[in-house]
Image (cartoon, rainbow, N blue to C red; front, side, top):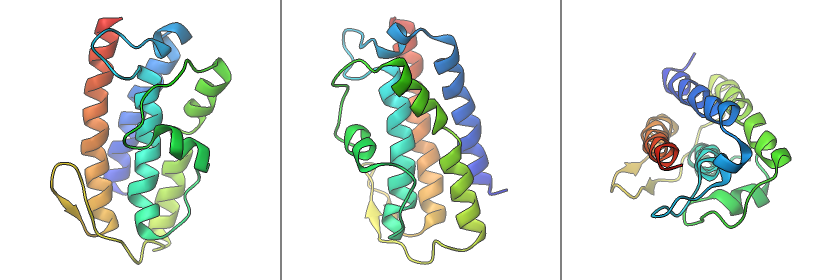
Length: 151
């Protein structure tokens, strides 16, 4: 098992607990002083992992273009999600990671387009992307904890 993907899985278990224990109203609520809600942060992490790992490797990920457009960097909560949409997001917590691990073992990430992230670090390969993704998801876990306290 790839260590970086294992860390992502552990974070996604935490995300899943939020989905399982909070109401639909709580997942959708944007408290005063925040731009996004809990479910947006979770979906954003799913999308970002796919963009950092797959798109920058010139590979197709497993997400729809619509989902990527809705939750990519620079987007924000636009509306409340239905229970069906939340369940779709929940269903994407782990399957993209399973695919990433299969593709990593199969050595599909041969090329990588350098990308400088908002912290100023430049990603030059998939291992750096997997490491940065965990940093990114940690930031959003912090946001989610703050959002939960603000509910």
